[in-house]
Amino acid sequence: MAPPVPTAGLPKEVAAVLRDAVDTGCLERAPAEAIAARLSDPLVRGAVLEAASESRRLGKGDVVTFSRNVFIPLTNLCRDRCSYCTFAKLPGDPAAKTYELDEVRAVVRDAVRLGCTEALLCLGDKPEVAYRPHREWLRERGFASTAEYLVEACRVAFEGGMLPHTNAGVLSQEEMAALRPWNASMGLMLESTSERLRAKGGPHYYAPDKDPKLRIRMHEEAGELGIPFTTGMLLGIGETDAERVDTLLVIRDLSDRHGHLQEAIVQPFHPKGDTPMRDVPALTNEDVAGWVALARLVLGPRMNVQAPPNLAPDALELLLGAGLNDWGGVSPLTIDFINPEAPWPTLRALRERTEAAGVRLRERLPVYPDDVISRPELFDPRIRAALHRFADEAGFARLRAGASQEAA
Ligand code: SF4
Image (cartoon, rainbow, N blue to C red; front, top):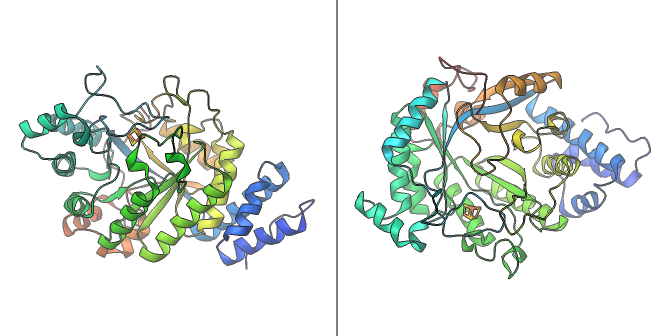
């Protein structure tokens, strides 16, 4: 049994729920909603953070991880138009860009020199469906779809000496199967199970790929293919507390049924000046920490819970005290193209601040050490062999020559 959660001054029913969540390793819907409704109370939030930290300690010990990556936005064309997004560009926009394979090769070469292991291929959703110029661009190069082109880009990144992790929006099962031989892992933010966000006036009205049913289905299909998969929740785009709890419960259910979810990201929305949602206030750091902690308690001690350090640069200590065990990808070479206004901390600063909080920072690959060591069936033989070259005996990343402590 875990040590008790501090209860001084805390309503009895809250203390009991938190104690039970730590002891049983999960938090169910009704108590999670009840806690969420009181999360703005500093006393309740403090106790939730304490309970989540205890849960993290039970499941993950004193280790917090990150992945040294390079971000390759293969194309920033996207058929969707989410109201908070500045990543997606329209054809003809001077900032619209699709990488040639030689450009992918060049970025990978630079990344390998800096000791990076993860090539994050992140791109817009099915742009060829919406834009004839992109269809023609692909056809001139011999590809029928962006997903087909992406397979080639992943091959280039792999053969250049990196482990690809693809996040290309909603993909079919066939497309994921074609990508699997060249990817260590893949991902899709579930974002939210809220159907309301797709209604007229909502942030996903012009984004058919943000239909929660489609995204849940892709998670299931990735599970059927046995692909290590990253998911997550986007906070602050108009969802309610109950919808956030529902999103976490759906993630837990997907993980229980398929066993392939390697990580859940808790990502706060950052308002951007040139978007329809520029005036929507960002969550406070305290709110973000409260939801990281609730995610830990709902998803349990074994799940890897991640929050991006560049989206709460003043609050790394607060997040470390909220039960996360992963900072995600941090790059010494490329910016966060989704949140270009938010620079990465240097790896040196991330290490110093993480370790000052009493935990150890370890570098991982795009997949987590437990999966590298214990779940060889998750990987194509070629990827499995590469993982063993890249990993140390405990499954963490072997430090590569040239590994830099700086960040883009
Ligand atoms: S699907 Fe992704 S890339 Fe496309 S508009 Fe939405 S957030 Fe931007």
